[in-house]
Image: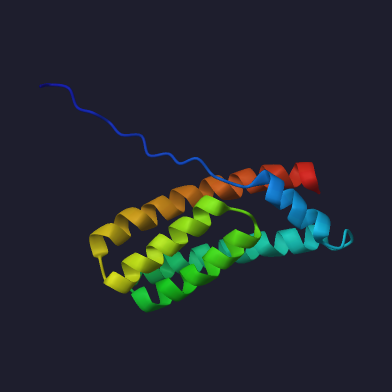
Length: 126
């Protein structure tokens, strides 16, 4: 009974590479990098805004910001991030602070992984 289990919190980012390729091909090739970078910046800005709302315990604003995160993540084909943003919204609507804490922590882990992955993919696609 002297052993203590340690859980390593890690998430695998899920970026749908095939769908992202289709999205980028449909864009005007002169505007691909600008559009792509604009979406990434918007996502990071909204994640930072969500952090402020979460820390202020402003669930209404957090849910509204998560709606935008879901949409932007969807456009960037970040399927896991988009799904977890919906889960955060559900926690906000239920005013479930325990579930929100866990779900929001997961959102941050997935967001960091997804942004890292999408940044690496940027080098390949653009």
